[in-house]
Length: 129
Image 1 (spheres, rainbow, N blue to C red):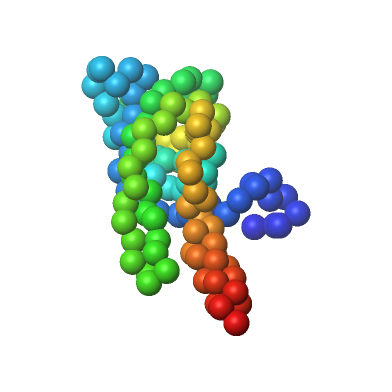
Image 2: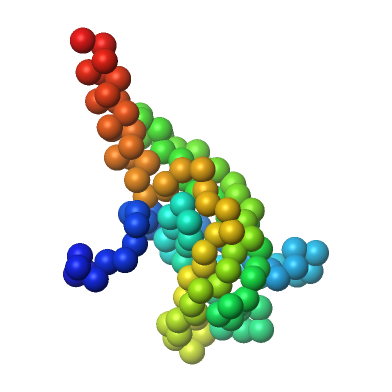
């Protein structure tokens, strides 16, 4: 990808984990598969059926994100967020890729947490001298 055309403010974490979404969580939920995520938004795929969101729609999404530790371990942190559907791309006749923006950002940057841990460890080690 050409860095000059990159508009993202932070690195995204690419992973494949279920995401559940609906316009109203009191009704039937649809399932998708997370593609990538940042602290302010995400992209997931879903079937191109009646439950697939459309651009401009506001939905609620429930998903989990890996939180990495400095020892290469990780736990899954679960979130429920109101989201705005920014774009829906046609992947195939059966699959759509949905790009969303969170109404409330995540409390960490999923794609930058390993780098953040390394920087934090280096700062701690330099402070011990």
